[in-house]
Image (tube, rainbow, N blue to C red):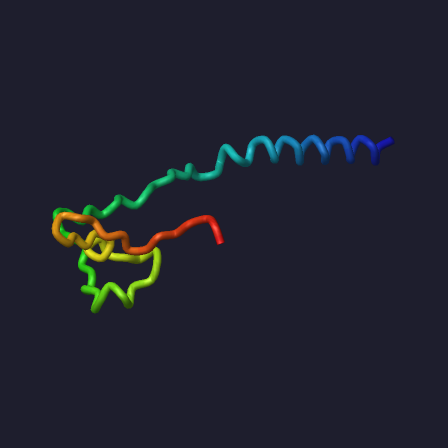
Length: 82
């Protein structure tokens, strides 16, 4: 009978410790690193040597829209039929 009371007392003490110990833990605060603004700088890109050496989907805008006499020439026609 004494062993069962000792076991019950031990379980009660462990339960109280589980409930009380988080109160002693230091508070944690989540912080985010501030986003660094780029300002008004433009992204630097190396010029492509020619439009024929570029691969899809990385065409430059100048290669996609070559204007000859006011008409827009398509860079490549992709269809679903085979």
